[in-house]
Image (cartoon, rainbow, N blue to C red; front, side):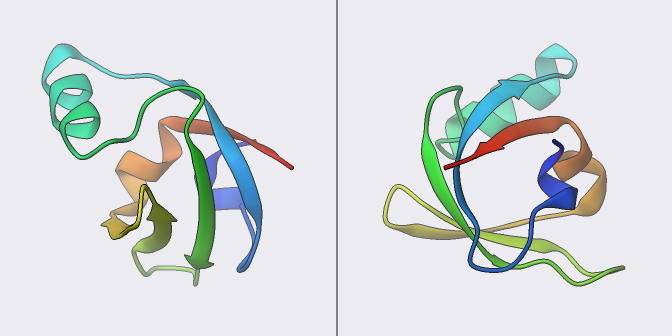
Length: 73
């Protein structure tokens, strides 16, 4: 499923990140890589997706979150 489809308080792992080189450099620089555990904090429609990952709260715009595939645990 895509990160934008996750529900609040869902715990899971990043299974795939897809995008061009610029996107991949930016997203991996903040710690979003395949296999990383995360928790969705907030995911309201038309708002950024908030996730807790590597002891950091990260806000992703919905376009970027669409490119990230996740699995629930």
